[in-house]
Image 1: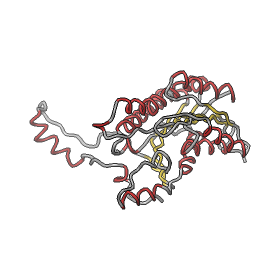
Image 2 (image 1 turned 30 degrees about the horizontal axis):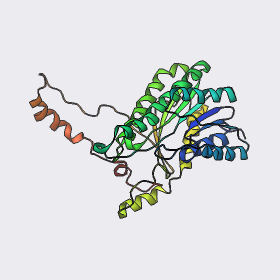
Image 3 (image 1 turned 180 degrees about the horizontal axis):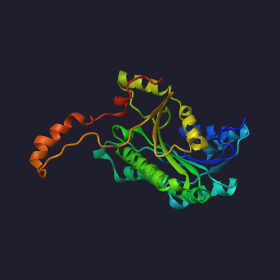
Image 4 (image 1 turned 120 degrees about the vertical axis):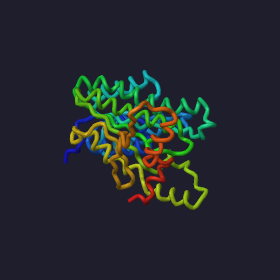
Length: 304
């Protein structure tokens, strides 16, 4: 049976392990020729090795898939150009880009260093821009293409000690929507997936209290592979009318997440003053304020 991505070419960043590997393997199984981009660094972005990508490539080739490796860094403009060129030169085209590469440098905000901020923003925000921008020329010329941007509930909802990561991921949400709007005329789509999965990006979650231990045990049930089917679908022609959306995957649950829209308003016949804002506007709006939730405060039930 012909796969849903037969004849297509996909570039997946951070594809040597975890969610990226699960997606690139699933896309290859669905018929796509794939570029496995991974520089093999640690979770904090240190080191570098081609072995994770090589292992992924061997797994794909074992079932007859077509794969090539890119060890370029997403955080460099010219490197992004080279990885996109590799897809075009090797397979003749490019149809799908999955911006998944990531590192973490967690720190409480008032203790976060400029180096920790820049390291994460360079990979998680500049990287998706560089790679998407490089691929945009090919997508525009061929009149088709799908961007899949991996984001996070750490930004969409909130989390502790991740201001760099959360800010970058929310930047990607805005980037994705802008791409969807700007490139609609060329039949190019861009969507976001906020994944839940147990892996090296979540292994640093504290396990000091019974609640934390229980949460981690539930996270372990959410394997990276659970996120792959939605990504494969979004890269296929079956998703030609799906663009500008934010999805979330949690084990066997798929959520469509809301986007910022006005939810309540107040009006005055006169000009607002600080005092009238204090006495009238804020009291009227307060019941609709959002609490300082974290991701686990919103997703309170066990993954199913």
